[in-house]
Amino acid sequence: MLTLLCRHSLVYPRFSYNYVLTARILLSWFPQAQSFEFLAPLYTVTDPFLNTFRGLVPSIGGIDLSPLLGFFLLNALTQATGAVGADGKDLDKEGWKRAKEVQKRMMKQQRGKAAVKQA
Image (cartoon, rainbow, N blue to C red; front, side, top):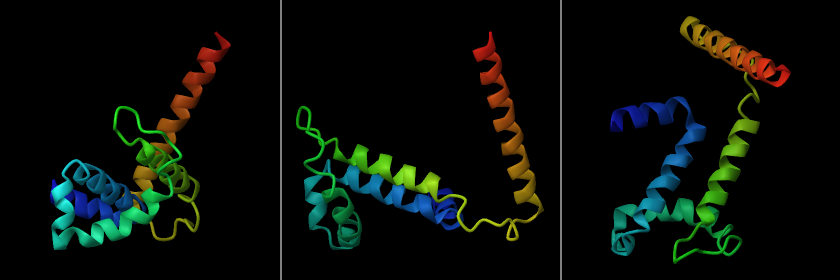
């Protein structure tokens, strides 16, 4: 699992911050985790981002929902910048094959939605 996570983070670095934020949020359930030295970089990297959203979303029942807003913004930015600089020259044959399969799948979904709207 950890190997897959590391490989995914190296291939898709923009998704790595999602994993770091998830780890930070899970560690917030254990307040004593802040005293561990090896976790200090995690808090240093994530706290400024999370602090921008604290107070914007009210907590419900003592649960801070502000990370949801942070994840929403991060995912929106990730999707908006996904194609920037992607000219396709760095894709190998397998990458092109996967890209074509995804494109075909998306086209089928769009056709299905159009057929439902017409019916």
